[in-house]
Length: 466
Ligand code: 9MR
Image (tube, rainbow, N blue to C red; front, side, top):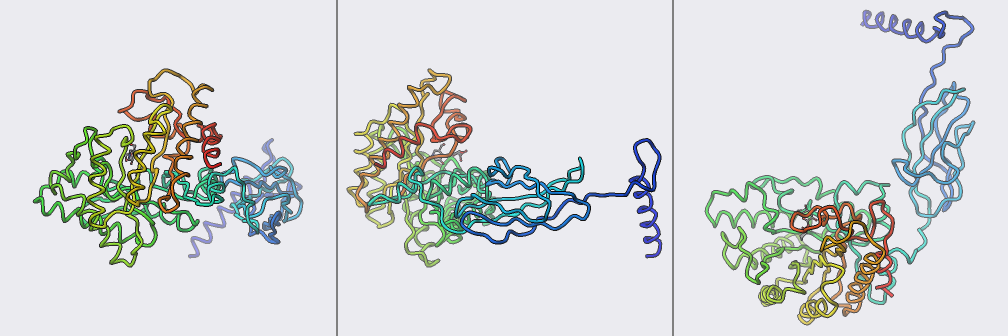
């Protein structure tokens, strides 16, 4: 102990000596030894609808402090007038704010030309409610006589408080679907072993923020984990693994998720049952089995309201596929195992037509099922004939967004559920990266551009709600 004390004493002496050496190498007893400490920000006080007081702990040597206030926790923007605003005390009145908004502040200490690093960041939410802005999608949808959820596909890493995704999501959307993190391959790491982190984050985010959560997707041939693809047990044992997976996932999120796509894309493009590993090993009854297991798990966990969906793509233009899908749906209806149909709607600015979409969707309406437009995006470069989003194509896309929103909004109240857009920004959509599509890198299928600016498509969506 004594040795440590002596060593610390020597170290302290060395630091003082170094600090007190002036640039010309000499030292003077008149040069004070000043170490400007980084300030520590403390919680806000006097919080009102449009102001709060930011506080921090005094730094003895500081002459003044610089305060930043932002609506983003990475300070990518600044509240007007609060970008390095200089203050002499240890408080700052932050004014002119909006009600019900989260702000972030941080402080630096200053002495002469010396400025410290940023302090810790404090979050503060003004009191009151954000004014309802009808240019936000969900605000306008919620004001309809028969409202429905406006959904978006999300990734767990977007759901950080204060991120631009978080802000857009909370303003504009009332439902979320995991774009991939709630599929079998990310969740199931082996028989009975799971990786829940990303899925939990998505579900908790929805629950914490009053946003609906749609589960996607329990069984999909494109999301089978390697261990199950390479399964060497009997077919009966394979079926038990699938049952276990469905049971465990549905049980975990019972009461936290309103709906699940149980089986996704079971029909191939020729209108036959897709020859998936599930069909091969479990036989034609596999679809019904999966729905039954999902229903049983939800009921056993006390969630008797879970909505079970069948989800597929291109059913509006591919009539054999549409017919086959409705055979499956009819069959599930007979066993009382289905509540809704998800029409993915990976459309283009030319196709499907309004009539094709209506014919397809109305078949499910006639059965009394809920309708989920579940993965909406609208390609504008499916023939690879443009190199940037032209005004003409942008307006054509806007009309197509408007058309589908109008079709959806005209559905009877009992059949409405959600209309979900498949992602936020154009450059993060799956479309430009898809190896199945022939326009790599060049498409702009969503509502926001690469910089998160609103596109004409967004206006089209809003106009569809008129
Ligand atoms: O958009 C999704 C992409 O990010 C994933 O990598 C991919 C595989 O999990 O799935 C994409 O979403 C698909 C959806 O789950 C089902 N319908 C087709 C979608 C586009 O491939």
